[in-house]
Image 1 (cartoon, helix red, strand yellow):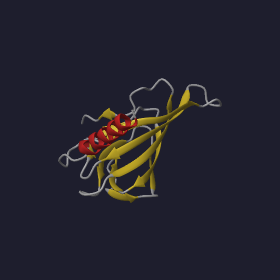
Image 2 (cartoon, one colour):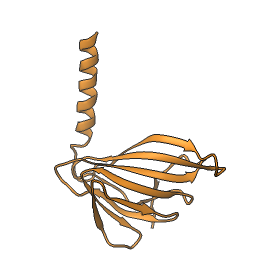
Image 3 (cartoon, helix red, strand yellow):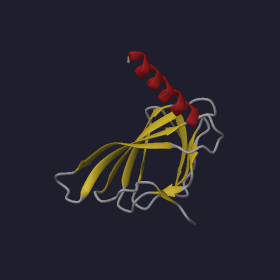
Image 4 (spheres, one colour):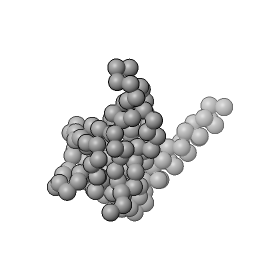
Length: 138
């Protein structure tokens, strides 16, 4: 039984790592890790999202719900980011940036071709917002 659990865990880990081994256009893995309604702000919630980029990984240009204020902190590695028409900036582990309601995230990519990058994005958003990442169409 223990051997089966270890094999299952090893397979899951190798599958996760394999999903990051693709070309420079592989998509980020986005996982909702926290969600809580704000008791003092009816209709608003705080949602924590773990974003993981494999080596060379990126996300297509996107926006977020119009109600969303986002504060993101790089947990591991480094990422390149461009919000609206601002400059492309590189953020390293421990550094943070924010996005305001209506902002467009034009560049969101791992700055490394060999190491993974992880960040935690904390949203303050309407409670009924289910889709937190929306494709951007020019």
